[in-house]
Image 1 (cartoon, one colour):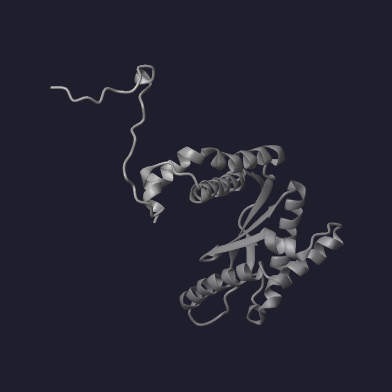
Image 2 (cartoon, one colour):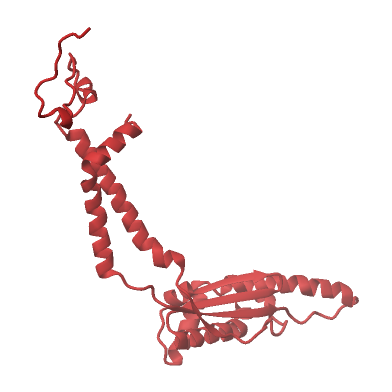
Length: 242
C-alpha cells in the first residue's frame, strides 16, 4: 500500500508528468471552447376541471368535481409528454409550415401538476419557434386531450389557460458552463497523477535507503552528504579529541 509520504515524494520527483496532461487539456479547451447555446422557455399553466353532473346534492357532487379535476390535470400532464401526442403536434406544426421532429418536441416538453393546476414547460433554442411550438402544444392539449380518455366524454372543456404564456430567456446553467471544462481538467489531473505513480514505480534508480530496503538488499551503512561550507576544506578531521 502506497503511503501518503511516498505519493508526495513521487510528485516532487515527477511533477512535470502531471502537468503535461493538464496543460494539453487546457490548451485544447481554450482553442475549442464555445459558449453554451441560449435557450428559451414558455411556461403554460392550465386549470383543469369539467362540468359537474346534475344530482341530488350540489355539495356532494362538487367534492367529486374537484377530485376529478385533479385526475384530469394529472392525466393531461402525462399525455403531453407522450410520443403519440408529440406526433399530433408535429403534424399540426407541419401544416403551419414549421417542420419539427416528434422526438424533438417530446424532448422539449416537460410537465408537472399540483392538485387541479397543470404546468407545461416548452424549452427551445429559437424564441419565435418556442412561441409557436408552445401555442400548438397548448391548443392541441385543449382540443384533442379529452379524446385520448373515454371517461372524459361529455364533460365539456376539461382545461383552461390560467395566464398568458410568455417566452423568457433561460440563463446558461452552471453545469453547462463549468461541468464540461472542469470535468476534462479533473480527468487530466487524474491521468497525470497516474503517470507520476507509474514513473515512480518503474524508475530503476536508487534514491534513498527505503529504495534499497525495498529491493531486498542489505544496507551496511550510509555516507552523509558533504555540506557546501565544508566542500573546500578537505576531508573532516576524524581524530579523537579530548
